Image (cartoon, rainbow, N blue to C red; front, side):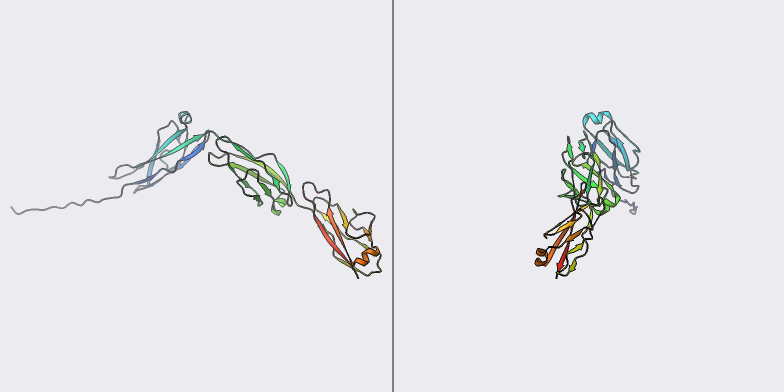
Length: 277
């Protein structure tokens, strides 16, 4: 007989590719969010575990695993993601490990009051399974020297003062994350104005000062490099200053108005120059 032929076609498809995720730490008592990836025609997979915990939805790539008592005793649980809807391909699996650790102890410190010209000195602590942490702020101030220094200083911004207070949060790192907060009340620094420079003739015997202090305080004190006196006193914003012959001979007298009763803020000052011609 004459030879006869027939043909069949074999179609090859790529096997599924599965990634369960990187190993992660979680605190004992917390649940573990997991986000797997399955690259296949169906893009579906199913979770399983060698522990005794449970999944919120084992057929969802993104779900939550709740460790069981056996997982906590062992200190870990392996989570296995296996591809489904594989067609003619064999299922493919990948495993990630949840490491269960005792939560560290985190203390942000007591609530404080600071000023825009007086930074807050922080005193945070992290102990136990972690000794490192990072500070964050609900405001726009700056941590110095940086946000990972537990006893950093926090320099409030003007926006912090406008808000009145900010929340500073210390969160542990290099382990499961635990946070603690403190409330920082922020005051605006006093505003001091010694007034515009003045010019008088050498035959003048006195001038009237025109200073002002506003903000958290309205009080201040005058000082001078001159030899005259203030009437009724150097704590009166619009005091009269009596010019002496020595002042006239010097030609200029400097007046400095410095805020007082500043609460936690540093004192603020401003200078006015008297020119005697």
